[in-house]
Image 1 (cartoon, one colour):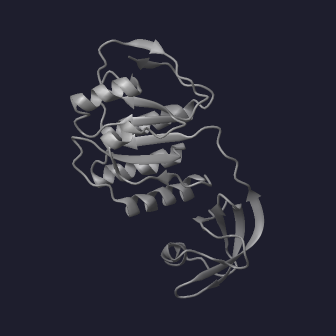
Image 2 (cartoon, helix red, strand yellow):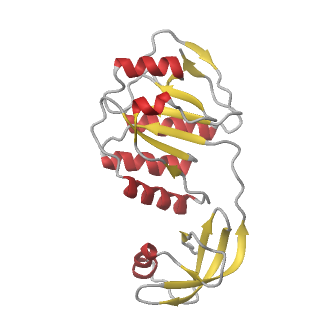
Image 3 (cartoon, helix red, strand yellow):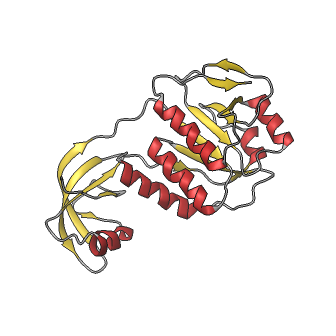
Amino acid sequence: MAKHIPRIYCPDLEMGPIILPDDCHLHLVSVLKLKPGDEIIVFNVESGEWLCILDSIRKHSIIARKWRLLREYQPGRQRLGLAFCPIKPGNTGLIIEKCTELGATDFWPIISEFTNYKFKFDKMKMIAKGATEQCGRLDIPVIHQEISFENFVNELPPDFLWISALERLEERQNSSIDTSKNCGFIVGPEGGFSESERNRLLDLTIPITLSPNVLRSETAAISCIAIAASKSLGFPEFTEN
């Protein structure tokens, strides 16, 4: 079995020796027991992904040098956005982690009428970074600042085809969605959207239903990105109002 080589995001790979971020010291030294001469992979969007050799390990710093370029960043053919209401922190983290693995490029935490939890911005950024390192992608998704539902829908981020996941749409017809555009999905909190919020989404977005069953918020969010990611050459037919 090939030896696992850890991947580390490093914001600066352009000049001289590479000083690895402080937050990776414990994992690389105490958990993985790495030592000088061992290999690691470092990456960012600007410089690509590099195989590196550890030169020195000190109490509070790890220094490496670039050895071989493994690949350059190739932008994806579309952006995948997710606007969702924060739920319990563990489940919010699950959304960030799994949707990062599946290719989401943008996250918007939105505060709706029935939202009961605050969005822990710094913690979720760390989860997105860790998921990026684990899954092999080079770009860390953008996590936007928390915003109210009303402000978000009043000025929906441009350049996205916005699709809202709504339960139990009354009138249904099958319709395909144009996948040549960047797609953004809007998912509600536990208990769903209020009637007024639901009406706004029906007016401003493409409403879809993911299942005849009522899905948990994290299930709906992950399902939206999973469907989009698995159909990079075209979506399946959603049930659209």
